[in-house]
Amino acid sequence: MDNWLGRSLKHKLSLLIIISVLVPVLSLGLFSYSIAENLTEEKAIDSGMNTLTLLGAYLENMVSDAEFLSLFILGHEDVQNYLRLPEMDGRLQRRVSALLMTMAVSKPYIANAIVEPESDRPPIASKSVTESGLADVTEEFPNYYSEYSKWWSSVHLQTTSSEGTRDVITMSRPIRSTTKYSTMGMLKISLLQNVISDHLKQAGLEGGGVVLLLDSSNRIMAGPDGFTKNELLDTYYPGIKSFSSNGSWMEYGSGVDKKTILYYGLENVEWRLVGVIPAQAYKLQNQYFLTLTAVAVSIAMLFVIAFVLFLIQKVTKPLSTLAKFLKKSSPDEPLPTLPVTTIDEVGQLIISYNRMSSRIENLTDEVKKNESLKKEADMLALQAQINPHFLYNTLSSVHWMALMKGEGRIADMVGSLSDFLRFSLNSGQEYCTVNQEISHIDNYVNIQSIRYPDKFQYEADIPSELLEKRMLKLLLQPLIENAMIHGILKRDGLGHISVRALAEHERITFIVEDDGIGMSTERVEELRSRIASKLESEDASSSGGSYGLRNVHSRLMLHYGMEAGLQIESEQGRGTKVTFTIPTTSTLLEQEREQVRLKEREQSGHDRRVQGEERQS
Image 1 (spheres, helix red, strand yellow):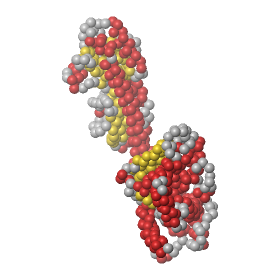
Image 2 (cartoon, one colour):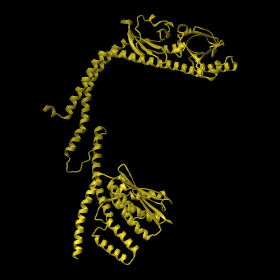
Image 3 (cartoon, one colour):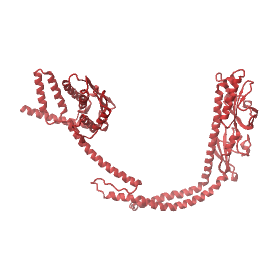
Image 4 (cartoon, one colour):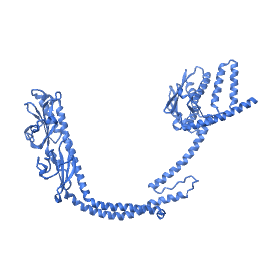
C-alpha cells in the first residue's frame, strides 16, 4: 500500500485507466459475441414495429378522417332537413349530393359517400352505385346500432357508373335526428382497398417481409399479391397463436421456415397490422457482425494502451507544472498570478484561480475603502461634536432672556434651534427612534416656518407602531431641507411638504414628497448620477444642492446595503418625491444599538463631569 501511495499521479492514472478501459472492451467483445443474434433480431423487430407504427398512424388518420366527415355529414343542416321532410325536396337533394361529392373529392382514398333515407326515397351518393356486395350487419345482429355508433365492413365489391367495379371497405352508421334522436337513414362512407394495399406493399420490412391488414376476425383485408382478400390468416400460417395485445411480436415455425410475426392494433377501429419477417434474413447478418466485432476489439485493445499513455502524459504535465508553481509561493505574500499555457480544463482551472486571486485582492481593497467611506460619512453627519454644551447653555440663556423680554417667537425659534442642534450633535450616536427623527424634523420645520411665514405647510403621517422602531439618524431632515429650499421656496404661493412611513415585511419605507417646482427628466437623471458618485470624488460645494442627498444616500448604503439607497421621482411643475427603505430589525442594527448604549453611558459620565465643573466655576 505504501508503495502504491508513493507512486506519482502519472503512474496511478496510467494503470487505472488502462485496466478500467481494457476490462470493459474485452467484456464488450465477449458480450457482443454472445448476443449478436439477439441484437440483430431486435433491430429487425424494432425497425418492423416502427414501420407498422407509421402504417398504423396512416390508417388511423384515414379512419379518423372518415369518421370526422361522417359526423360533419350527420349534423349538416341540409342532410337533416332532407331526411326529416316527408316528401322529397329536389333542391335539398341537389345540395346534399354536392356536399357528398365535395367530401369524397377532398380525400383521395374515399371511394364513395352515400346517404340512404329510411323511407322509400332513393339514396343520394357522390358516385351512383349500380351494384354492391356490402352485407347488412343488422341481418346477423339486429340490435347492433343500439350498442355501437358505427360498423366497419370487410372488403367487398362496389360498382359505380363512373369508376366501375372496385374493392372497398365501408363504414356504416345511422343518421339520427338532432332534435328527436330518431333514426332517419344510414350514412355509408367507402374507402378504396387498393390505396391501403399500395401502402402495405411499400412497407419494406427486413428480408422481403410482408405486411397484412386484418379485421377483428383475423381475415385479410389488404396485403401484397399472393394473399386473398377476406381469407383467414390461419390459412397461410396454420396454428399461429392468437394476438394477445395491441402491439408486440412472437416467433412462428422453426429452422429455415422460422419467422418473426409482428402485430400492431389500431386504436379507433378493430383492425390489426401484421408483419411477417423470415428469420433467415437477419441471421445472415450475424456472421458479419461477429467477425467485425472480433477485429474491432483486437484493434481497440492495442489502440487504447497507446492512447492512454499519450493522454496521461498530456494531462499530467500541466498539473505537475501547476503543483510546482504553487509549492514555491509563500503564504505571507499575495496570491501569485499563474501562467496559462493551455485552454483545456486545466487551463480554465488556472484562469479561474487567477480571477479568484484578483477578486480577493479587489474585495480586500473595497472593504478597506468602504470602512473609510463609512467613517467619513458618519463624520459628515455628526459635525461640531467638540464640547457642544457651551452652545446649548448659551442658547438656553438666550431662550430665557427672550421669554423675560416677552419675545415669544424668538424664544420659540431659539428653543427649536437648541433642540435641533442637541439632536444633531448628540455625542456621535448613530441611531435613534423614528419618533426622535420626526421630532427633529418638527424643530427644523418650526424654525423655517418662522423664517418663511405662510410659505409652506408640513404634515407627518407615521403609524404609531413605528414610532419606537430604530433607524439611522439624520436621514429625513436633509430631505425636508432639500424639498423646502429647491422645491417650495422657488414656487409661488403656499407649498406642501409631507413625510409618510409604510411598514411591510419587516421593512419600513419613508416617503418625502413636495409640490414644488419639480425637475425635468434630464435634471433627475443628473441628480441621480451625482448622489450615486463616490464621496471622495465630489466637492462639498457642488452646485445643485445634491450634497445633502448624496450624504444621505451614501450613509444608507453603507449602513443598510446597496438596496437601501434613495429613489428620486420628479415632474416639472408637479413636485418631487424621494423614498428609501430600511429594515426594521437586522444583525447590523442590533450591533449598532449596542454601540449606542455604550456611547450613552460614556456621554452620561461626561455630562456629570461637565456639570460638576460648571458648579465649581
